[in-house]
Amino acid sequence: MAVVDLVMPKLGESIMEATVLKWHKQPGDPVKMDETVLEIATDKVDSEVPSTAEGVIDEILFNVNDVVPIGTVIARIRTGAAEPATAPAQKPQQPVTSHQSPAAGSWQSTTVNQPAVVNGNAGRFYSPLVLNIAAGEGVSMTELEKIPGTGNEGRVTKKDILQYVEAKKAGNTSFEPRASSFEQKPAPVQQQAARVVNVEEQKPLVAQGSQLAAYSGNVEIIEMDRMRKAIANHMVHSTHTSAHVTSFTEADVTNMVLWRERVKKEFEKREGEKLTFTPLFIEAVVRCIKKYPWLNSSVDGDKIILKRDINIGMAAALPSGNLIVPVIKNADQLNLVGLTKQVNTLANNARNAKLKPDDTAGGTFTLTNVGTFGSLMGTPIINQPQVAILAVGAIKKRPVVIETEQGDSIAIRHMMYLSMSYDHRIIDGALGATFLNAVAKELEHFNPEREI
Image (tube, rainbow, N blue to C red):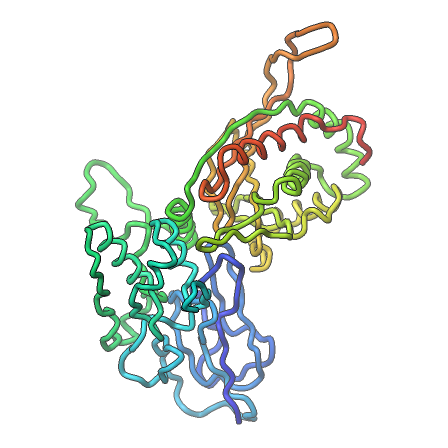
């Protein structure tokens, strides 16, 4: 008889934690291989976690509504048992560290099997969150290596780096971290049904728990739903991580508009798919990324990670009004028909809540069509850990000056504004503007005689 650990699966490059929504199995219940054990949710998509072994659920380590770091053991399965256990079902235990048994009476560490990154000459482990804070606050790797860590095996936690930044701003050069607040007995489980179990008990970026007395007049107080809270935290985290700069340009997309109008019925009849503008925009973006690969990268501390795969995220609206960003993998390897099928499939799955975790993972550059909602332009927020996001506005007919062989003239053209927010830590204004104008030129030089 053996015990198999069921861990929180990796759900994407930028996803570090997930929320437990519902347990389908309880201690003592039999479970088959690949049978659903629980439902989880991230800021991007809901998903099911299947069993990785056949046997009996031995114990469950987290409650509904707990937020669990990726890679953490969430349940244990006893294999080799022919009959379900007769022992009474146990309530979920508190999350444990890799050096502590579930029955231990207190936490000795603030780190719970968190994926880590090795950096620095000393070979210390730093989480992506700590590296992002250090980069945003101008803390060098040399300084980071000197910060005493209160985490497991001396790792630097979020609390440690924030305390160091605070002390540095105050001119305190003899910094010593304060003791971890976790060196105490955990509260009873039944009192923590809605408690957020986080790796370092991070303070939420979204203000919570405001008193109703703070508001006056005729107001309605609406609690954010789970996804809206996650999106809000994700957006605030992005603005705290990247140095946002937004550039603007406009493009004459008349040739593209007239071509699509001419071929869209034939395209739908032949391919069974509606031809929207989105795959045409993605085509142009992909061509320009190949010319300027730094726009297809991410930042890890003081390192730039160039991505060879071109995976384009596209913002899509959910029935709830929230936004989600499904990803078209290897977009540079797809022709127009392939891009159209991918765009339509992902958009339909988003509307019908059928997206899988892999559908929103691995994006390297994001396109958002704010024109769908009638906006002329926007200043989008970067989708971490990417370094750029392009927004296309509504296409409008406007009188513009055009150059002809007979001289300048005024004509009615289909015009569209483009705006791109990029991370000024590695993308300077010259590169950002050059890339944005390159995309505009690709759209303007669209071949009106193109075959479908």
